[in-house]
Length: 367
Ligand code: NAD
Image (cartoon, protein in one colour):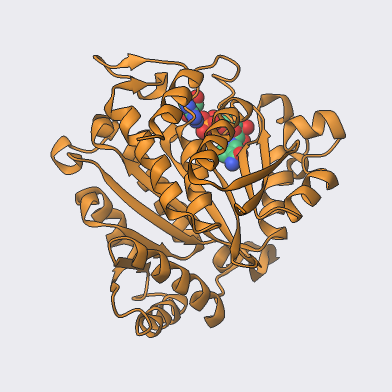
């Protein structure tokens, strides 16, 4: 009897439904090839849910996610909803509550630069020749964004704004263990980024990383100060594999890394939770980019970020590593064969639509 995985698909707005359609067809084909079953529910989220149900995250959508093993998310937002009050806007009212509800504490963003697309990188060709892939693991629920006290007050005729950076040892242990487990499955190299020359938080962070490293002797751990890390990513991106860091540093560095690849439509992401359904780890998987309203409805969006999000879901939530690798190699082959959507097109390659590239990736699954 094949195993069944329950997935909530939330396509959202803009290009979301177009790229989600390709991702779902590919997932179903992959399930046939690798003999597993997928039970899929599709629900409204974001602006589409505001229009149909009056709120960005309707109860029905949330309960579909609750009974699922993972969420495959498209993207939300667009100019139609920008006039709404800030806390009713699609991203704020759908994505943030979902992250909170499922305690999604780790954000994984691979910066993937395939050899054939290295010309899209803003870096010098000799630095990116042959491509690179750096996986940035960002702690998502602690640190400066959530620490108390927080606020702005008047004092002695001046205005003071306060944010507080707080990390508990248990929070650092949780993300460190995850980072080592992931690094162990890859090149066994983990770089931890902090600011231990200035911040108390970073002293704790570094001490915990060193302590947890004892449990993973096969993984080589190194430490970089955040300012140096920002420089080294540009100087020598090919020397990195897995990077782990706290919330604020990760927010900034993951965008820097995405920019180094030059192709936002290629980049997936995962947000992993503490929730465990048996052997499965709950996670939310989505493209790194947004709903791209400028190209929505034209059939030109690149579905690869959404498709690689499916691969991440199979690997990190369901431990289907071979199926994940099958999808990733189908994407690599499609790019190597010269097919390109408009965002990654260059002279001498074949310009194709969202559907055409999706079809080709599905065909390449069988190799
Ligand atoms: P964006 O990522 O949507 O678009 C930036 C540029 O990248 C655009 O030119 C777009 O055409 C291009 N692009 C992005 N994904 C692409 C793809 N798959 N294929 C081809 N081209 C692609 O960012 P933005 O313009 O700042 O935001 C647009 C909307 O998306 C806003 O409403 C914003 O709030 C929302 N947004 C949502 C999320 C999310 O749902 N997680 C994330 C970021 C932005």
